[in-house]
Image 1 (cartoon, rainbow, N blue to C red):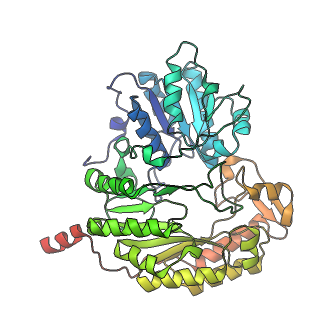
Image 2 (cartoon, rainbow, N blue to C red):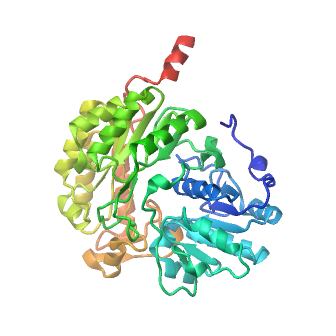
Image 3 (cartoon, rainbow, N blue to C red):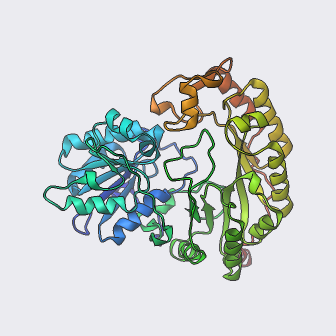
Length: 473
């Protein structure tokens, strides 16, 4: 385990392990990262899995997170000049896809023979449109890329590689778009956290430990919320074995110094028996004394006995996607929950002593000023640790975008500039009398009614290292 945060010079030191096969890059929002951007940040699970499986197949890899490590594009280009990787892969969400494309353009200008590809949720949702909009990319990777990238690297060894024949790869001349879905996620090696400078990722929750690492117990979500990006096949839930999950937890604690885990499953408590087994295994191995954990889940899966066991096993916080305080809007959005479900779930979490935070999305189909007020008034009654109020974004490929393009409920898309597709400012969709200015005003008003409760009365720290520290004092 590394003891200190790496310097920029150490991160960009010459690659000394032979020919660099894969350079993976996560771009920042701009070509020159903002050093004042100290938001909560978690290392990318998707990248870590791709790196791990690529290494498992015998290839040499390097990862550069431009935002977290404050790497400007000029220093990145100089690193590429020196090391000339066999393949460069960028990953981007909608708000960073234009920056990723500009980086690719600059790379191709200097190194036209090095293949540069793009992956990520934006690419997966609208592959043909992305390749047409950004011709600087040689190809795209759609779906889950753990097995795709090694196959690409094997193909690139040939004199005349045929990337179009690889499932999950989209090229300009490929007729049929297919997606790679990892059916057996137990077959994947554990995330390659050794390739990250973990000191640069403070985590996403108020875990109050020296390190939080994300992990999943399953992939996929069977629900169809209109605002969610759901690639083909991703509704199928694929579960990991308890042995596989526990092996990763122990590795994170012992090899990487993790004292907190964020379970990034979309619905952590979907399968109650699996959660029971995970919690019991954590208790049996005494891991609840070495780490605490948080999760995200749905209010309609709330169960007192499950929540109680989760608390015993070290769960300290859970996130709920409330989305609206109006049952009609919840139905239109396809959320399949009610405000009664919300009250019950929060009540049960509080009863067992687990903190709760959540969000209400502003501007969903059918939204009015009155329904927004219903949301923040409900939030006040719930009295939880923290609540956010993001503005609805019609991301490419979502049902919400299709609804807006048809003008349903008075929805209107204001911009197709992907830089603007964040969930706060400036906002890209309005409906009827709810102009973007009004939405931003209501967002600010809602947030002012619900500041984060930094003075939340947390339960006594039960981690073993905390008790040792108290004794030493």
